Amino acid sequence: MSKFIVVEGLDGTGKTTQIKILADYIKGKSKDAVITAEPTSHPSGKLIRRILAGEVPCDPFALAALFLSDRIIHNTDSEDGIEKMLSEGKTVISDRYYYSTFAYQGHETDLSWTMDMHFSCPKIRRPDLVLFLTMSPEKCIERIRANRPDEAIEIYENTESLTKISRQFDTVFDILKEKENIVYVDADGTVEEVSRRLFDAYDKYCGE
Ligand code: TYD
Image (cartoon, rainbow, N blue to C red):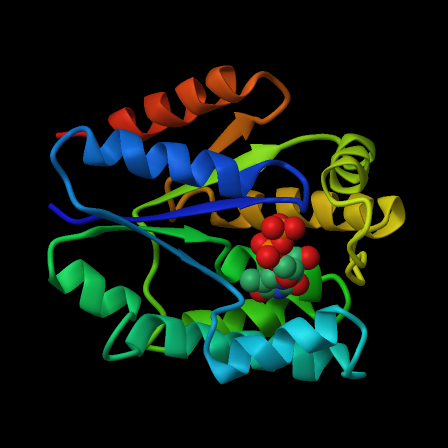
């Protein structure tokens, strides 16, 4: 059966690499797996990227609402939306989802408001499994700088912001732990060690 999996984590935790490896692992079990991401590549996601790069100023409440809008498009798009891919029997792995809005925008706006607008929206699906990659904010910043020394640093990519966001992720997952399958995965290890932890969580919650 198709599953909807979300991978979350601070910038620099290695989500993108691990998602590719997890998708290959699922395909190795003769299942179709697709990777998707937020912000999306739709016009809404492109505007968000410009805001994150500091090119376009934006009130944090407006940014939270833009993420909601981008997420509705992510769910419903008739070509590459989550619902469409699940209906075709694919396992969908999303690089970030509403937990990021709760963590990144929730601490700058109002956490209850960000949660309410998502959970009262019938177009936003709840994932079957959330894998949260954990790592200290200091190590995340070290890795961001080492991996892309020449690239611009986004608005949240500093130790102070990441420390607040990390605490906020804990608050969010604590609130949601009774309702959703949330697995904390230690992202501090070799690529193989971390991917083994992800495979174990996948097998436990989604393996048939
Ligand atoms: P992403 O491209 O996943 O960055 P990285 O690969 O470095 O993790 O995400 C871009 C940024 O968008 C990241 O700093 C987190 C931020 N973001 C939010 O603030 N709210 C959201 O709802 C989402 C989906 C992302």
